[in-house]
Length: 194
Image (cartoon, rainbow, N blue to C red; front, side, top):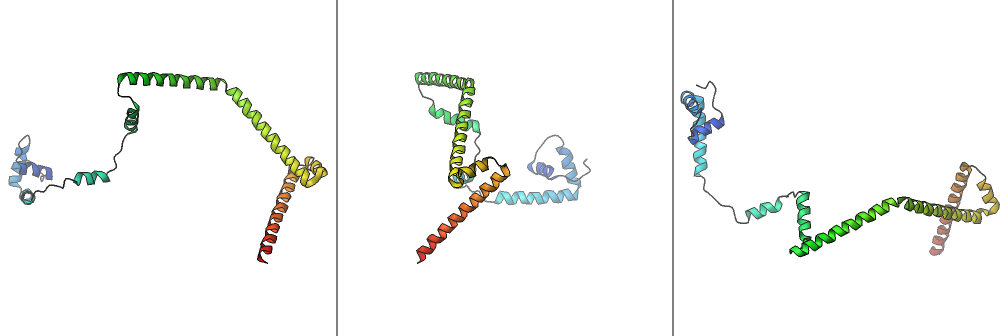
C-alpha cells in the first residue's frame, strides 16, 4: 500500500488503464484515498472534455508559413560541401581531369610559396631600400621647403639646434601658414560681398 497521494503521472496511468509493475498498488491506494479519488474524477472530466473537442486539420500552407519564420542553422561543413559539389563535374573523365588540374595547381602554389619564403630576405632588403629612398626624398623635400621659407642661413641654424627648437620652429611655421590661409580667405570673402 502507498502511504502518499498519487502523482499526476500515476493518475494518468490509472485513467489510461495501463497494466504493469506497481499499478496494483496505485489502484489500491486510489480506492482507499478520498483525495486521490477526487483528483482522478477531476482528471477524468478533463479527459472527457478534451475528447469531445472537434478534430480539425491545419491548412495545407500552415507548415510553409511556420517554416518561413524559422531560422534554420546550417553547419559550415554542410554549406561548404554543397558549394563544392556545384563545381564537381558529372562525368568520371571530367572529374579525373579536374582532380589532376587541382593537384597541379596546388603543387604550383606550394612551390611558389616555398620559393617566396626562401627569398623573403631579398624582399625584405628591397622593402628596406624602398623605405630608405622614400625617407631621403621626404627629407630632401622638407629641406628644400625650409630653405625656400627660411633661407640658407635659417636652415643652417635650424639644423644645428636641438629637437625642441626645431619643434617650436615647426609649430610657428604651421601657425603663420594657418593665419595666412585664414587671412586670404577673409580677403576673398570680403571682396565677394562688395
